[in-house]
Length: 442
Image (cartoon, rainbow, N blue to C red; front, side):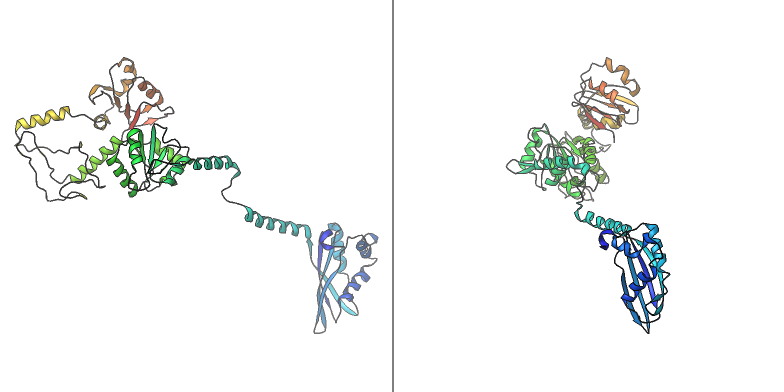
């Protein structure tokens, strides 16, 4: 019988003889003393003839006049018959001319051993050919992603990396590098273009002037520097911010969509910069010229501007104030009344920004209707706005309301033809109007 083909069990025995014996003596003792003991069904020679009993393997050695060894008997009979054969071996008390003892050490189920070997080998094979990142459930997404990445191109004489829809879209998203464009393509956004460095290419400068531009840079110092340069040399309409310290190329699709939905108008960014400048300069007298005087009155200062020179003050991030963002201070009491009246008249006629309206409406529970010139057309309680929307027929530019705006209320405001709507929060908005800019309070 070929052991490896038919064996189900292996009987493991140990033998000890009081004398020197050989392998043939042990095998002869097994066949001679078991013959006729178990009946015809378990006759050893008949079992071997039928292939149910394998070759009896004996390993024996002699030492100090005694012999010790191991016996292995493979079988293909059932468990009960194997147990009987094993027990019968312990009845052998003589090997050759020597007294001996044989004991069953164990009965091994070869099939269990093979199954264990199969499992361990299968584990090893699985680790060898398993390729991380290939998930059967995401095969479609993987194919679509490769298609998006292949569509990245270069545009303009500067060969800037861009998505396939940059030239045909009315709006663009300006990012830092090629990796950012690729990551936005993975998220399904195809109108991104990369500046690739702090020197803004002319192609992007022209695109920002012609299209609605959103700046979307990394949330670090480098991103701030690129944004500052972009604002100085071209037109930007919105700014989107990733989480502070995060890179656009590392954001998930959900994080990208969230950041772009929460983009803020550029007026908001400029307003924040003026506030930062005022805070940094609050302990310093400010240069002020008064109309009607022969010269300019310059108040001396012992403090130096933040990060700037004596000639030109700059913001903490290094940018200079815009020309139309004049910083003024209160006049001394000894000022000429005529001069004061002139300045007060200038203050009345100066255009008001939406953010100044927000500061005046915030936490007052009112709604303010704003005209095309930034003037207040009407102001009423925020709770009354829904009832009176149908009666409003003024030419309005926007609405500032100190109340949460829902989808239902937003739909009603859309009918007024306004260009912007400012509120503390916007809840449950699923249909974004294309003509209205939503500005959250801050």
